[in-house]
Length: 94
Image (tube, rainbow, N blue to C red; front, side, top):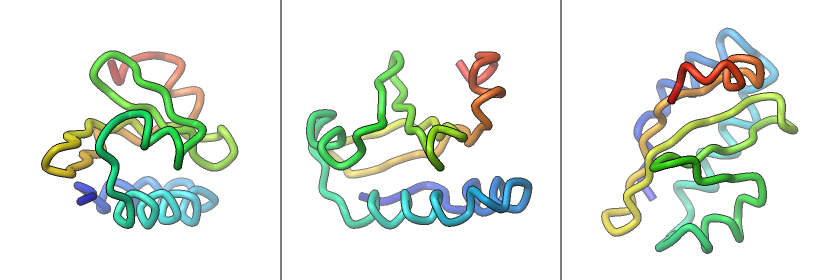
């Protein structure tokens, strides 16, 4: 899969240093994967939910949330938001 964009992960990591390693681990798993549907994504990422048209990943032991759009056929993942758990709960990302 192609991740768009790693820049969002790096910028979030600048504000939350403890998120850097889990976010880059997420990036490596996404880029190494060949997911064709949500079931295959769920097999690799046990902590992912489909919320409307978005996919929400728990990052860093449920401390952070990564919201993404995924196009399975062209193998593209767009990072829409990286949030703290509190920011995610406020729902402004929807």
